[in-house]
Length: 110
Image 1 (cartoon, one colour):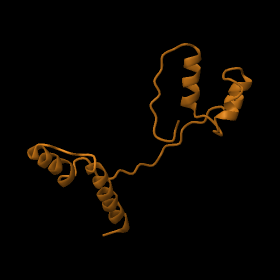
Image 2 (image 1 turned 135 degrees about the vertical axis):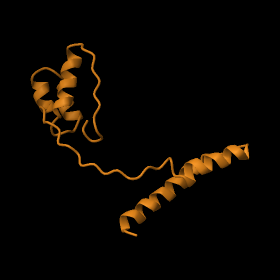
Image 3 (image 1 turned 60 degrees about the vertical axis):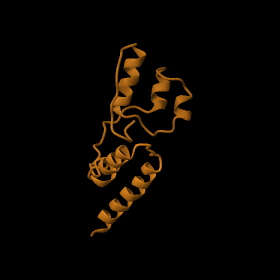
Image 4 (image 1 turned 90 degrees about the vertical axis):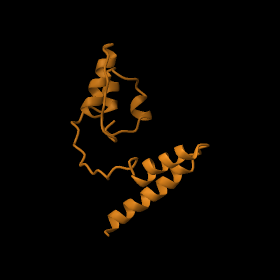
């Protein structure tokens, strides 16, 4: 067994114990069902997925937006990001125009 699969198994064991610590059932049939479905079949824990993060198109800095009068001047000092991504900038522009928008994006991309 590789160290990755050992680590994966250990994480599953620890998380299963954590989740199980919150479960309490008066009916033993329900308890047996939940135990089987969540812990024995591991339906709650899918196989690990590894994806390579795409590079998001760069946008302006908050300082540039503040200098253009598009955001409050303190934004660049309070929000510590080097540069916005293009989709973040577009969301700000739509919001400033009063247009509805939804931004869905991967973790770490703003």
